Length: 451
Image (cartoon, rainbow, N blue to C red; front, top):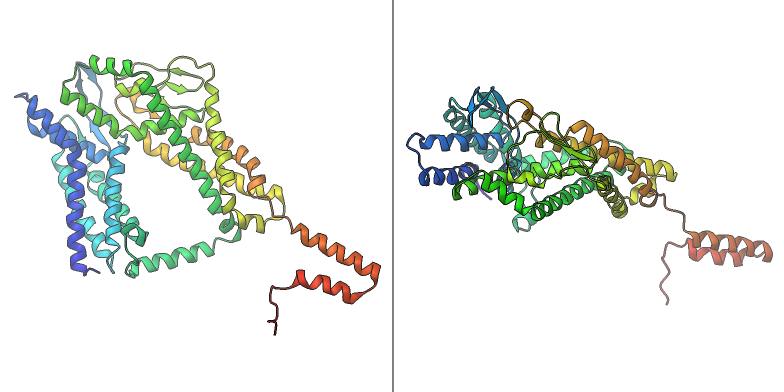
C-alpha cells in the first residue's frame, strides 16, 4: 500500500514515460531518416513537428494544413481529421496499465491528478512547439483532448482492476472504487427486471458479432495482401523510397491498420466504404477515383464481384453462432418469459441494437479526412452500415433466439408421475397409498436419520 505522495510521484513518472513512448514511436524513425538522408535545407524540427502532429492526431486532434503546393500540385487548405487508431490503441493501453498498477494504492485520486498534470503539461508543450507554416494543430483541442483521453483510460484501469490483473490476492479498499461499485449497483437495480435479464446476454452476443466481423476482416486483408504481394512491391518501388523511407511508410500504415480493418468490416455488411467522395468499395463492385499510391490499398478488391454478396454470410453466420453460444447466459430469460415469441424478440432485437450501436461508434472513430477535396470523406458511413448490420443481425438472432431464450418447459417426469398417482388414487380409492406415492416427489430431500 502506497502513500499519497508515493502514488503521485509514481504515476507522474509512468505518465512521462508513456508520453516518451507514444511520441518517440514516430520521432525515432523520422530522426533516423533525417540523420541518414539529411538535406541541408531541412532541419530536425520538421521531423519533430511531423511526429507531434501524428501523436496529437492519435488523441483525436485535428491538424490544419494551409493552402500550399504539395508534390508540385497546388492544394487548397484542408483538415486532417482521421485518427491513427494503431497508435491510439498503444497510448490507451499504456494508460490502462498505469491505472491497473495504481489500483494497489488505497487512494486513487493522487494518481489521477498526477496523470492529468503531467500529460496536460506535455500536451501544451507539444501543441505549442508543433506549429509551422505547413501544418498546425487545433490549440484548444491539442491542449485539453490528449489529457482527457489519457486520464479517462487511467481512471477506468484503476477503478475496474482485479487482483488477478496484478498477480495479488487482494487489492486495497479504495474509497473511489467502493463508491463507484455502490453507484453502479444502485443504477443497475433501478433499471427494472427486463433490462437486468435481457441486457447481459444481448451485450455478449452483440459484441461477439462485432468482434467476429473485425476478425474476419483482418484475416481477409492479410490474405488480400498475400495474394497481391506483387502489386504491393510495385507500389513500394513506384514511390522510389529509400530503406528508411520504406520503413517509415510501413510504420505509418501499421498505425492506420485498425482503420482499414474496420473498413473491411463495413464491406462485409454489404454497405461498403469509400476512399474519397463519390467512391464506393462494396461486395457488389468497386468504384474508385484517383487514389494515393499506398501499398495497403492493394488489398482493396477491384472490379465487379460475381459472388460478392456471399460476404453478407459472415454477419449472418456470426449472428447465429453468437446467439446460440449465449444460451448458458440466458437462463434467467428462459425462467422469466412465458411466451417463446416474446422471449425471442426480446433477445433478437437488443442483440441487433447492441451490434449496430457499437458499429456506429467504431465508424465514427475510424473515418475522417486524409486530404483536400474528395479525400475529406474516407471510411464507412456510420448510419448506413449500422442500419444494414442491424437488419441482418436482428432477423437472424431473433430466429436463433427461439432456441436460446425459449422458456423452459416444466419437468415432464414430475407431471407424468402426478398423473399416474391421481389415476391410481381414483382406481384404488386408497388415499394412503396415493400419498405414499406423492411424498417422495414432493419431498425437499430431507430424510430422518435411521436409528
